[in-house]
Length: 328
Image (cartoon, rainbow, N blue to C red; front, side):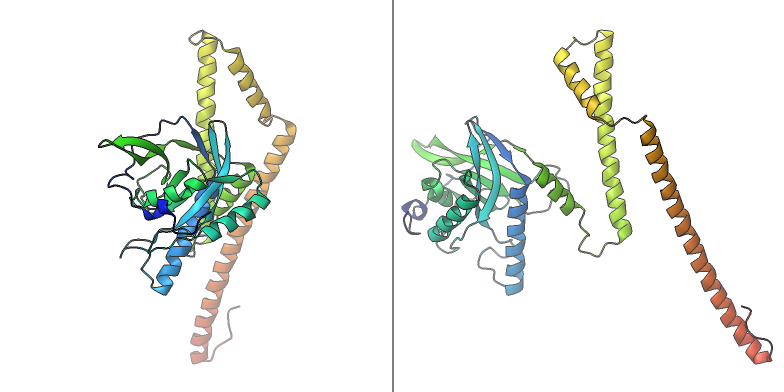
């Protein structure tokens, strides 16, 4: 590979070449794993914290968070692209060139651990695609002829319910009579494995950095359980309504769906068994016992404080009159 003075990077794209079109027409299916989102978010947080501590604002405009760059790796099976992991890239903020030696070393290290993974594209942070992004995109075309571009928006928007992550592909469009590469947005779905689900759940239940109490953690935990039960109840109600409609003849009979429902029902634990009743009553009684013990402890503590205050007051009054000792 060539040195950082890559002609693809050095040449500036025409104005508007990096503008993102509405949607992709490649027909590829993208699956994104949560580990990639966590890695990009962690990369951005570390760089932002380091920039704030050092007071270095050369990597971003005043008032703007610094941008971070990296590669996304995974596999492509047919028309399905699955992004599993990512690693950071070293980029010269002045010339906008990539550190090729660092990129090649990272590729070799990841190939030893994940031999089936290869570089699918790159990632960055920002609210929207920038014109300079096409330079980095072209520079990675010698690694992957059609790289993908993952963009994470680090800005916090409480009214937004979707993930602040977009995936873009590059397509050749004719603009003003000349062919130009532009970014087009592609749809994606979140794909998880068991280890990722456990990790994400652990991160979601970490103690808040503002010193939240145990009661706050318990309330958040119970709220999550309540939401999960509420969602499960709504899904079961939908299945029940569909089965009732099928039984009445309002819906056509679907044997394949009935087999899936039957398999799902068999996977649920038996709620009417004697063992469940015994275990449930034991847990229920233990919970009530702990509640009563906590109540008695609070009452005893309050009573002790009251007795101590009474003794202190009584000792002072009797000391002035020369009377008897404390009440207790």
